[in-house]
Amino acid sequence: MEETVKKFNIKELRLKDVKEFIASIPYNKITIKDLLSFEKTTTNKIIAGTIVLFLGLFVIGVLMYLMHGHHAYNVTREHPWGLLIAVYIFFVVSSTGLCIVGSLGDVFGFKDYMLISKRAIFGSIVTIMAGFAVIAFEIGHPVTMLIYNVISPGLTSAIWWMGTLYGLYLTFMIIEFIFLLKNDMKSARTFGLIGLLVGLAAHSNLGGVFGFLNARTISNGVFYPTYFILTAFITGIFIAFIMMGFRYKINFPKEVQTMLSNLAKIQGLLISILIFFVTWKMLTDIYGGMENRSEVAIHILGSWTFWAEVILAMVIPLYLILKSKGQDTKKLFFASLSGMVGIFFMRYNLVHDTQLKPLQMMKKELYQLPPEWVHYFPSAAEIMISLGGLGICLALYYVGTKLFNLDSDTHH
Image (tube, helix red, strand yellow):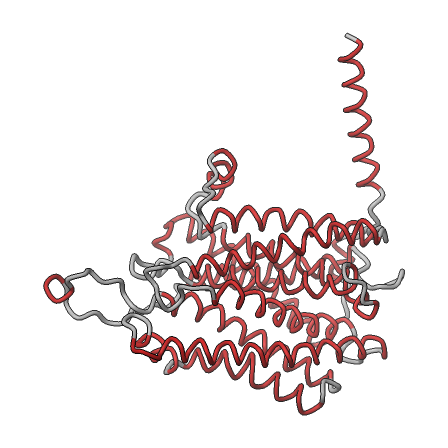
């Protein structure tokens, strides 16, 4: 009896500690009026209207999916991965990149980057939540998936590891963010390091989902697990410029200017490495004329979406970084906007290009007509849910800027 009472008291004490911990998290009390009280400039009105529009489109797209299931999408047996997979990858890549940028300050101790730590870590949380919101309507039964993910884990499945690791990653990011708000830098560093390692593992594993496709020789191999980490860091720096650009209306204080200039120099190196990676990837794909790989690579080189990726995400940002030696942060803000559009094409190309060549029977002359390239264009429901994911991301981030102090100082 006494042992039962002691156990009950311990549980009660632990519950009380948890409640006290949650109650001690600093936040601003806000109302609907506070959310609507933003500076009514033309740009802000356009952004606010766009967010509302995207959220409305998300609702419509979800309703179409609930009524028609996957028939609302233009995916087929030949092209089973569509726009929603690409958008999910876009968001989780952004999340990992922001986690890396945020970790420069609070995990690795570079003081210049503490200016963006809270903002970047919060951004990593909202981007991955937006990614989960989009992928939930690509998975047939997301609730069932969560249940069986626990009771019957597929330890040999890269997709099982992806979902599990990203769930853990989100948990550690939230804990790290709470400790950053409480200014408990020791705990934030501990959970930030764990979250970073889990996030990198999850993200390289996501690249492994493509690298393990033995039937798709265009993507099979070790390239994508490393490529995903590189492009995540690049994406995180693009978003860092965009975040700080809107925060300071492109009139950066001296310390922010210094931080962004340093990030720009890192970005120049990363983009140069990316160009080197992509060049050798295309050369090795084409060389030797391997069936199902070389002709796909040549077809990719002739697509406008590939060159949109190259010009918007690589050429323009790298040119502006080299021209100004990373000092013209105002132009680099706009280069980052261009870069994010290019990153979207990069994710879309990754998913679509993998499925360009239809899978063949062994005796294709006997059983099949000569195959054509697989054609795919997203349906209205896919486009609306994808834009809705962006709306969710922007809305959550805006609410966060009101609810929390995301700056490095103690005042807004």
